[in-house]
Image (cartoon, rainbow, N blue to C red):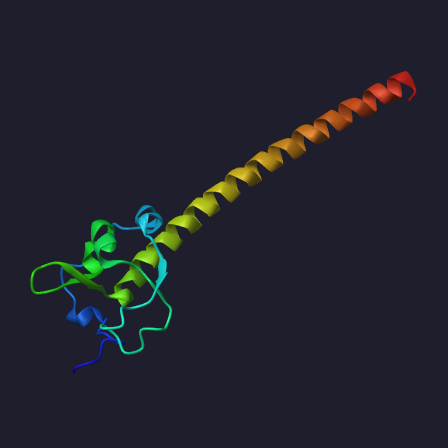
Length: 131
């Protein structure tokens, strides 16, 4: 069954050579998002301001999402393919945030325990000195 570019087949039944995505937050941080207008001779609605990337720059970071012209030069970007890279970057950030939160929870519990111990010592001293 044929589909258009908006909805591509994604079932396991049509896939082979499946590997983990290696791109993530490091590559996303190297991307250079921009606003731009197309040149008048290229696009009739050239006045519209668009958001995107430069294909030549993207080629240096995530070449798998770049399309090429007949001469093999970067020509366009398949923005749908960037979704998997952004998902991986979000997952990496979530893992880092979860780790950081766990570390902070451990530190807070240790500080609360120390605080309680110091309060108990202070109570003993105040009772001893009648304060």
